[in-house]
Amino acid sequence: MENFRFYWDEYVANREKHEDYYNVMENYSDTPILNEIIRYLDEKFPNWNTNSGIGFYAAEFVSDIIDEFESYVNYDDSEEEENEDCEANEEEFTQKELEFLHQTISSYYKTTLENFEHRFNMYSIDEFEAYLESLIENEVDDDKIAELEDLSQEAYDKMYDDFKNKLKEKIVYDFKSEIIFD
Image (cartoon, helix red, strand yellow):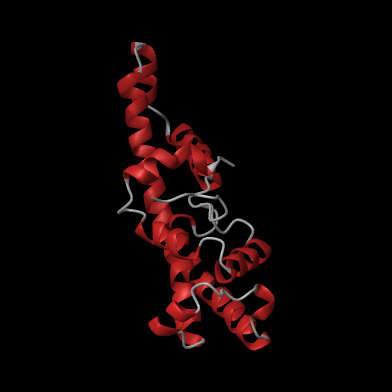
């Protein structure tokens, strides 16, 4: 799997596009709630943050889970400010809170995965078409250009399947990196 840091420049340049990720990392990096969410997702859904899982929906998913959990335990702004320096340890989550968190993750994950799979199929087709077009535009050999332009359906499908499989392995968001924000 490709490493997140390879894509760092893309994320900095597209902060607005990845707002949920930045918000989660700025507000919850290395907190018990984020650590427990990541631990549970890694255990139950090992490919969750790749395009084989929920891919580019992962940041919004984690953000929604945090919001749901905070609502469940009745945190309000004043409580958060009072407890800012006293973050609970994972061991301090009650059994009921952990059960709620895990059930919420599992339930939301199934729905999110179904929605993502449809969106990813559309995305992968668009990305493949752009990739194929760039191959043709950057090719200098006229015979190779003609071959790319006149791919048989079987050759096109194989090329697309290979492309899609590589795209599925991509880690979209890595919530484990120690990222320092300004």
